[in-house]
Length: 379
Image 1 (cartoon, one colour):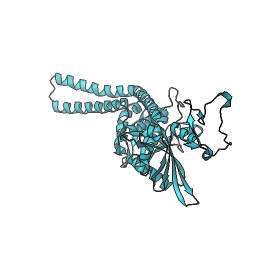
Image 2 (spheres, rainbow, N blue to C red):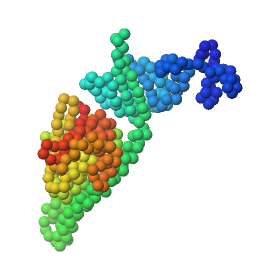
Image 3 (cartoon, rainbow, N blue to C red):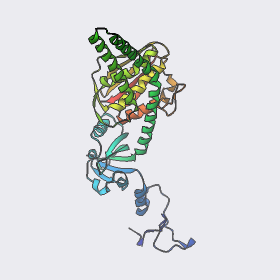
């Protein structure tokens, strides 16, 4: 590239010269008037910035075709920038993310929105990306463009997975007392029936049935406990909310019983949501466990559904003292907790998982007592 007839070279250290040797203070200096407009900078400077910036900047047409993308896309997604020109944006992200972004702009008048998406790399691998998308209208030509700033969220995702694993193991340890109590009772029953059979009692079939029922109870509890220790998957599909709710209720009921708390599930829950089952079950464990710990007296935790035009809201309502209004906005901040031995990570992890599902968490203080935690999922 030529600048006023002179070749533009770098000295190997990122310094630019005009092609002449640099001799101390006698070096030629390009005189550029101070101006915040990037277009006033020499093109070699713009190229240098483009080659060294980590984020991807992309311009899309109103129809969603890629008009321009920075060279940084090669480092992140392995594409040459020329390979993407003319391609449609929804070819490059997961199908569910494409549907969500389309609906988000259809339902909102906001021209600037933030998303967390999975982009498809050149070799068919998905990369977690933070996306800031802005819709711009050019009045002179009546054209509409979309400007996208994409940021690699791989490191953030890995750090969050470490926190999730840490919180999951902490939850498993805290549930140990209730689970031990719940398993010991069936074992005592089984031992008693075996002793009766050993003594020659003739009611074998009846006793065998009772023992099998008790073993199945223990099996269900231990299966859910093992689930906690497993890493979160990333396999999304349509899942029945009721199935996930009843799974975590079977796991948390022993702890609730120790405090004389009943977990009531609305039997009319028939909705399904597009999600990763293991991740949403982790969210439910965090929320219901918080509700149990918040209640100092006997009472109920109620789980039910509310439907709106755009969301399916899964609600968990407790009868504790309620979250004070002045700290509701702080819940979800790392290491902020109202519990004496809490880590403050449970709600933060919950919010991150919901964001990855294009959902959100709303916390409300009830009119009488307790709080309601609403998990919002897009329809």
